[in-house]
Each structure stands twice: as structure tokens, then as C-alpha cells.
Image (cartoon, rainbow, N blue to C red; front, side):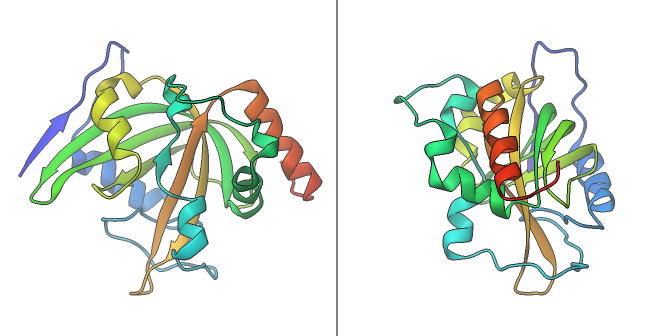
Length: 200
């Protein structure tokens, strides 16, 4: 088993896997716990199960447009039912910047951890700590983007939808969906939240 630190031209320091992972578990001992594939903590509030439609909304994916790829002309976020649902059900929606990306080779494939720094909370009652980490295994929809973009993600900012779920063993795990950090999307998040009566 080996660990690969992905590099970037951005002047940011890549740290070793354990250094990223342990603070994450400590930071999310409250509202949001560790992500899939790592040690988790017992939830302190009722959480849903990560199945069915919930897994479609928070699919651990990174949209192609978030990294500058336009495969087709996307609908405006306000016209996308999943977008509104994500705003409605997310524990938090934040603007965040990638600070480190760490890859770890396992017997089943490459797993990643992406550390981010919160730039702005857009909505949600259970936001992450200012620095938080997404634990991404080989089954995640984000693996393809991580594999192809490598360290180029470091320094990029995104809009991140976050939601915690309860696992079968009673612990909690964090799932996400990442989209482009663009002014129209930010506006769509805040407007949708306002219609639903959420406080910023």
C-alpha cells in the first residue's frame, strides 16, 4: 500500500494522509462526521440513511463544469429539481477552496482525501468547520475528476453541498455534491434557501 501526494503549481503544502484524516475526525465530532471509508463517530442528532434518492442527491460527485468541462449546455440551477432538493435537504451549502489532495493506493484501487477551507456559508443549519476533509473512495463519482485533474484542483474553489448520514453500524458519514463556484449558482442557492425559509 502506498500514498501519493498530488502536486500543483499553487504554493500550498501537501500533507501526509494521517495528518489530514485525524483532524477531520476531531473537527466533525459534532454535526457532521467522517466520510465513507474512515473511522466515524456516533451522530448527535437524527440522521437519514444513505440509500435511494438521497444517494442520488449527494452522490459524492464533482460536476464537469466545476472544473471547466462543458459536455453540454446545462440548465440554469433554478430549473434543476435536484439542485433545489440539495439546497432544501443539505446540512450546509458552502463555498470552499481546495487546500490539499492526497491519493492512497489500496488493494481495491485509489482512494483520495480532499481538504477544503470554507470561504463562505451560503445556507444550512449544520455547517462544517472552517477546514474540512472529504474522504473519497474508489466508488465515488468524483474519482474520475480527481484522477484526471490531480493536483490542479489545489487552489480551486467550489460550491459544496454537504449532508451527514447514519451508517448501519450507528456511526455517521459525510456525503457531498460539488458544483461550480459561479455567481449565478451562488445566487440560486441563496434565493432557493430564502424561498424555503432557511437562514443564511
